[in-house]
Amino acid sequence: MANLTTFRGWVDQPDGRGTFDIIWSSFLTIFLCTWTCLHLNVPAPKEGIWWPIFRKFKWMVFTIFAPEFLLGLAAGQRLNARRTTDNLHAMGFTTWTSRHSFYANMGGFVLQPRESTPFPIHGIHLVWLIKEGYLTLPEITEEEIADKSKANLLNKSIVCLQTGWFVVQCLGRWHQKVPLTTLELATITYVWCTWGIYANWLKKPLDVESPTVLKIQFSTADILTKAGPAASKPYRYTPLDFVWDWHVSWTTDVQPHLHFRVDPRKRPLPRILNDGFPWIDRATELVNISFMITFYGAIHMFGWNFIFPTAIEKTLWRVSALVVMCTVAVFVIWELGWGVIRAWHLLYINKRPIRLKSTYYVWANKVEKIPGVNGLPIHDEQFDANVITGWHLIFMIPLGVLYVLSRLYVMGEALASLRALPSETFQDVDWTRYIPHS
Image 1: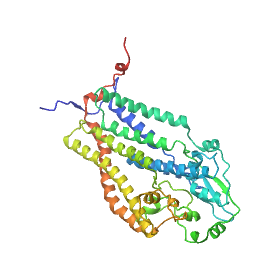
Image 2: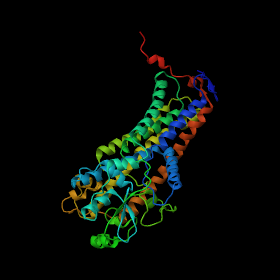
Image 3: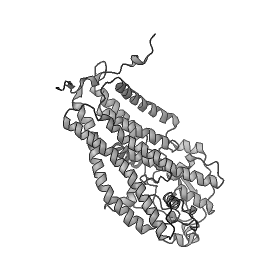
């Protein structure tokens, strides 16, 4: 049977819906999703106004290409904040909240040792400094942190309502069997990720311009000397690396292997980097974030039977949608598998029995629960640097290239398909059908 679908090119804005309406509503929603959701860490001192804005613009571009990775990053940061809060509550500081922990983990506190270079500290460093008696709990209230933030719950609620209305319109078109464009379908994926990002960063301050300085009466040399052999190695990021040497970061751990320029070069690091890979060590959280990210890829599959200008474009969309969904799932499985292999290796070199419970404790960074470890961390830097990072690159580079090509096609086709849309696409949703009539 011949295809009777009528295609139309650019349609001027009539009394109802035109091509410009589709582009404007989609682009506005994407901007709201990729700019307002960015809760970046505190900038370095004396960076001025423009560097933080430029950095946020770069992250917006990155989010446009891969919003699901920002969702994973936000989930990891929320878990980090929970760890910091739990540790301080266990020490008796029950007034400490998750907002405090977010503020600490994003570089909100800068340590100023006596006659030493100041440097930012993470929440884990803060806990250690308090335990060792170098600091008391910072006297900053939740209201003072909220005052430093450039957004509150009302601002975020307005963005969620605006993006939610876009989704409602798309659902109305689907329910009334009115065609939806691939651009609108792609926009829904951003809305899905933005809602997840907002949920994870609900307590994280937005666009904090300057940190809180914590002065102590000890020098950096005093701290390192008292720490003993554990602090004898040269540090990579800050003098407190022996307490916790940060997460694996794209900037500091991946770019050197790719021979990219690594910034910032200053040591100690003047700010906490934004691109630390998340470490999700709770099974329920791993399941939740895996579902959120995989469903992001699956949303593209709803365009499987969309009407495209040509048959080849329809086939390429289907293939690309499958690749986007599957690469995300493969990435999650791959990361989980390497975490288990690393745990087995660390148990082996430390002559510990490889059991399910011990494997989980190492994977979840809870090695103090393994009998006989006495709270000491189990770590093999050479294995992490050469084996884990090396095999990651060997596997991730081709997977990443495949993902990028598919993602670029999906983004390009979302725009290219606007040149020839079914005429029914320009019909408005008949909202009166949902109003009860007597």
